[in-house]
Image (cartoon, rainbow, N blue to C red; front, side):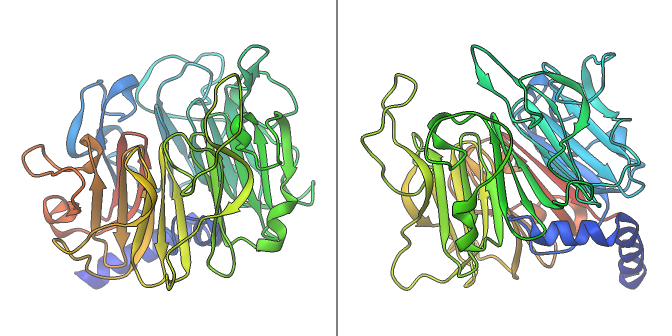
Length: 412
């Protein structure tokens, strides 16, 4: 029976395409090629971001019934909306539709359950990233599409990357990327109001709102189209990602660099003396190395959430900082619940992290409903195994974290 299941997942992964496997390995929070299965989700339910038809919280993972017959091979969770990609190439989104971020076009409306995004379905989408009010989609040919909040004169730029501040209700291709442009994207990441991409040559590109230095160019200027962040070239990043208002990358020699806003200590170091937007908060306008303890292993994965950052080291330990809790890089305690197996994926929400092992086990740490445990079973800031309570022994093949949600693709 196990062999038949493995064969089915191998076939589904093949249908997702070799390009998806390459994209998954390049994306900073995972080291494993994608597989497919049924989609489960939990967390707070505001704006219908769980896709279960109502706005009630879900403490334990529940199947998204609208997608029960769909083999999902990629999932993304943002602050208020979520997305999934099927093995047949269809793209689905649900949740808050305030600025066109669901890509449903002019006929958009409420999406309490997943709705198919016609503009993105069938074009080879391999990765989705959901920000606060915008969405990025990457295709197997290295193209990037975006939709949602483009910015305003009063509120500053959004993260769409089309050279203007227009709101887009239908996804539009970002002209910087793709075969015709000569720059092939291999990963994308959407933040609060800024975006990042890493191309096939390993170069990092950022665009959107520049407030707090989150773009990494040394100032707070908005950038309306993708711009090459040349300062990262010497780091030869193996992964790059953004959070709500900060950004991070891992260099080829296993060092971690962060930049942007630091009011929740999400940068991992102290920065003082900067004044931005009339308020005095710590911020860093260019990539700076996070000081890790002497003798620390090299970093291999980084994930940014709304309020913090998580890093996986080569010795399988996880470092956390930010989340209004950790002022400096701190080892996530695992003595009470040892993690069984190598960690292959690490995701960070607002006040929680989730990690997945090569054997398909999932563990969460932090606080809140997104820990995927019943209130009686969960304990704040103590690691726990989700798969010990859910899924009846089936393996989890992919995870994603929104600010206050966690999604899991579970093999059938």
